[in-house]
Amino acid sequence: MNISFLQDINLKIIPRVGHSQFAMTKLAIIALLGLFLPALAYVPKIVGIKSAIGGQFPYQVALKINGTFYCGGSIVSRNFVLTAAHCVADDYMKEYPASFFTVIAGTIDYENGGISKTVKKIHIHENYASRS
Image (cartoon, rainbow, N blue to C red; front, side, top):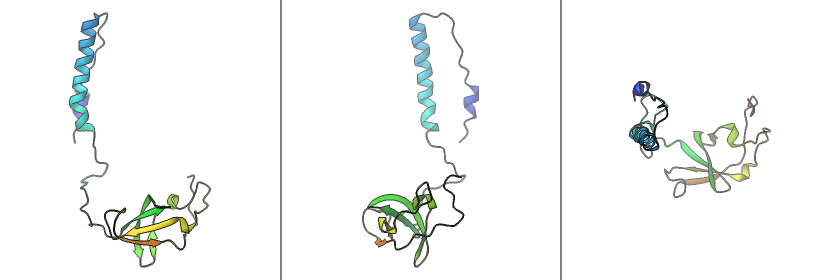
């Protein structure tokens, strides 16, 4: 999306105008912003981004903590799911109890369907530093 047109908009200060003229100027500016803001509302951060089709990434899982969606993860083998370390450890790098977590796989709706497995063990990489 090309937003270079914003460089062409010049707002000028109008000295000592009457109340109605000032109100009309504000109204015109607000109307202009209303035209441009919807176009600027969504700007993809990845070049060539496309929405995923349901089920397109079957290795993606939902990680729930005490029954509530918490983080995502990826199946890397039959017994292992990879997720971000900050999802399973506090700010002091102390891991949360594995019993808090459930992994939901095989569905695009983590509230319904799929396979639910409890987490047995959490492994945090030895070089993980939460404050860096």
